[in-house]
Image 1: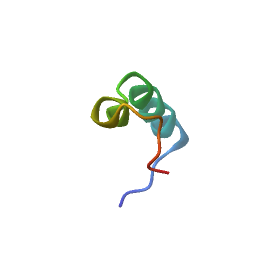
Image 2: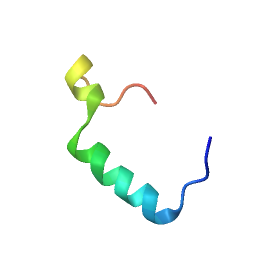
Image 3: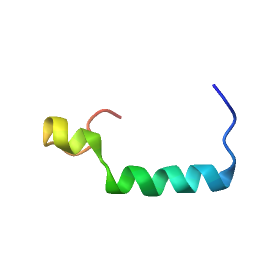
Image 4: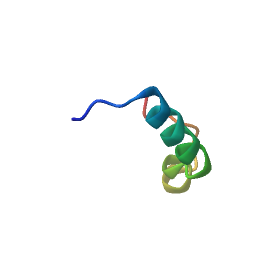
Amino acid sequence: MRHWTPEERLKQAELIKTWQPWKQSTGAKDTSR
C-alpha cells in the first residue's frame, strides 16, 4: 500500500463524498465501519 499525502487524501475524500458506493449497494448509512 502506498503512502498518501494529505492533498491526495483530501482529493479522495471529495471523490468519495460524491460517489458513495455503500449508499447505492445497501441503501443504509455507512454501516461498514
